[in-house]
Amino acid sequence: MHTQIPVTRGGRSVRVASVAGLALLAGLLSGGGSAADESTGPVSLTAACGAEDSGSATVAATVAVAVDVPATGEIGRPVQPGPATLTVTLSRADLAGLVPEGTEAFVSRAALTVKIAQDGESTEAPWELYAPSTPLPADGDVALVHSGEVPYVTLGSPGDVVFSVKELTIELRSATAESEKTAPPLTKVTCRLKEGENGHLATTRVTDGSGTGAEPSGTPETSTPPGGGSGRAEEKDIAVEPAAAEDDEDPDYCPVDPPVGEMDGSEAPQPPPGDAPRVVENANPQFACANVVGLANVQKLNGAMIINDPAHPAHPALISVKPAARITIRGFDAVGGYYIRFDSLADIDLPDADSTFLAFGFQPVTAKVSFETGPMTISFGNVGSTVFSTAYFKQSLRLHDVEINGTPLDVGNDCRTEKAFKVVLNGGAAYTNVGVGGRLDGEVTIPPFTGCGTGGENLNPLFTAAISGPGNRIVMEQASTCVPTNPEASYCPPPPAELPGTGPKP
Figure 1 (cartoon, rainbow, N blue to C red):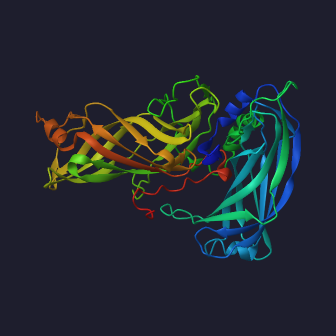
Figure 2: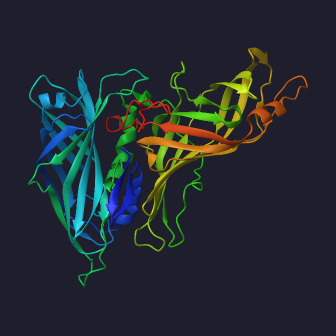
């Protein structure tokens, strides 16, 4: 799956990204050296777990972690643990008290915070793991078995590196079929180790590779390859997943075509002057899809319309995505500072939107709006400790089925903006990444209209005066993505997106 979680490095907040295709980056950076694996686990720990904001008492849980960690490594070369298996065991009664009443089965996602320490300095890395649908039994204990690939870590100085568990958060979602308009119930459970547990998983001895001395000290750097963090995992993805998709019991999780076209990351924040960043093209990104919904405001008309209305009888269109098709990265210690950007290619064929406005403040106008949307580039990452996210595409609008005060107005078949206009949406940290989704918003300038009117009647000035101009706000909310070749480790079928402004206020 795909995550983007703040990690602490030298007092700064740095967002570590996990998206399909980062395995390619890990392979390129790893070089020819390798280390023998230290088979770790399962390490058994005890923890106290409680649902967030529930006010209920915590319950006891047994946490077991099994992971292969390299026994040795070299500075400047990634140390790649994993894959990892996390088993959380609770009593049936305790687990039933943490999930909504009536839950019969659930899927689980675990975010394990792992502390990585060397010579008094440390950082944290997110290990995001998944459990398939687990039934709630009549009695006895329940074991939630999560598994997945985990981040690698690169060290800048020799010495022992200690991996240890710090905290665990579990998301429990009902596996029972829900209404298309209702998100599955979600419970967030936080587990903290009992007093006296140090959470130790493994120790890796890192050398300078020459035996001649130490390099300058540096904090560990982490990078998270979703869907696979090593060359072996990437080979497995290519060799196995397409065959698995052919036998998928429900191949219609993403009934849309993969996106095509060229990415354009120029609207995302660019790396500050300094060393040239490394650019990695992912030749085989995993195909995914998600629900997305938005609001578009027309400044002159003082009104808004719903884009991709989830209540539409024909159902909203899915956005198709190739996550992390390109990765641009520059290390912490490079001239110019840390920079990482993940560019994903996306596409969506939006259905017509219904709009109702008061033209010029008094004249009721209804119309259908068709959208011609070009290839979309979704970018997210870090400039130093600052996180960013952007979506960029070009779009044209066409008006049809226009009525003024209930009377049809024949605008012809080609009443449209005279040219495509740029749409740049920004989310900062409110948009986590392509896998998890989030909110993006921005403002666009609508060009003048052309081709409006029939029989020699020129209606272009009417629509240009009523609609065209700057300051038109667009807000988009993307839900979590479904990877149809790996439905158990992603959000399949794609969960609904929440219409901006309808959720709980912060």
